[in-house]
Length: 335
Ligand SMILES: NC(=O)c1ccc[n+]([C@@H]2O[C@H](COP(=O)([O-])OP(=O)(O)OC[C@H]3O[C@@H](n4cnc5c(N)ncnc54)[C@H](OP(=O)(O)O)[C@@H]3O)[C@@H](O)[C@H]2O)c1
Image 1 (cartoon, rainbow, N blue to C red):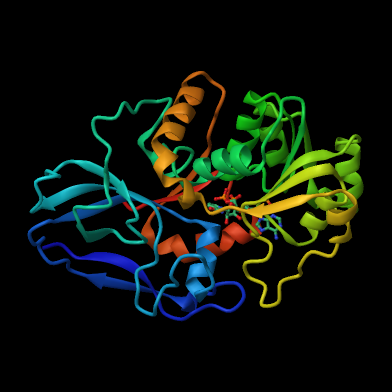
Image 2 (image 1 turned 180 degrees about the horizontal axis):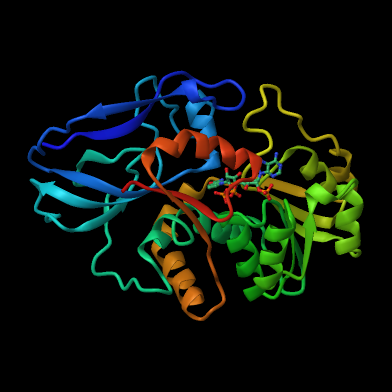
């Protein structure tokens, strides 16, 4: 049997995950037993939200030393002792940072014969039609409670969650303002139809920059970042505004979170702030995925992927997410 490689957790990180937190291990998988399949991974994702699981501070169970780093992936069945899957089937699931794995024949989604093409590629199932897109869909619509004509502000707007959120917001009749780092990401958001963009790296005073972009205030803040950006958004919220806490990418590597300072605004402006766990909506995923696939085919929901080849780079590329190095859904192609 061929030898494969996988990244495992070598040390729980404190602060930014350094290279020595991960170990690249070679292994030869066993042949599948009854009810198991052997999967050759084609793609896996790098997710900033995984950071909490590396140090055990998450809504999901933390990883133990020696565990394979978890992530969404797409792979091909290369050996099967399952009646559900045959050799050659393509599947999607939580495959992890690995070139191959033995997996029970449950908890995998068969991708064939779903209609993938140039418009909706198979990798969309771990991107715009996977957790990032679904986070945008349910966070905006269920927690954001948008009404046509309202103003939506999004941080990390050029990422897969943020860019999906903004485009979904446009289909709902919202005025959409995106915050992103750098001119290239901001130009991309304008091309997607965002009404205004703020390059936070070029602004001395983000609170004022948001006021300039939304002089009448913000109804919904879709927060992917937290930290000082969250305070700047709070100061621009309209009365009865809603803050959707999707992620806190500026806080994940902080030993001591910087926290919210502008809490008085919650009283004066009757604001509401609510956190999201996308898996709470799992039963509604198929309907949302069908609706988003239709938006893609109608040209209303574009998505961008940032793919590199080779499992070796995964830890470095993972840390780079926190420096804004990704431009789109960050995926590793394993061969
Ligand atoms: N609640 C849920 O169920 C759920 C599920 C999935 C994801 N999420 C969250 O959704 C958020 C977005 O995820 P994603 O997959 O779409 O990734 P993403 O937005 O592409 O995340 C990486 C980007 O975050 C921005 N960033 C990193 N550090 C920053 C900082 N200190 N200040 C401001 N921006 C910073 C960078 O963009 P710039 O270049 O623009 O700075 C970077 O490219 C994450 O916080 C993630 O944890 C939540």
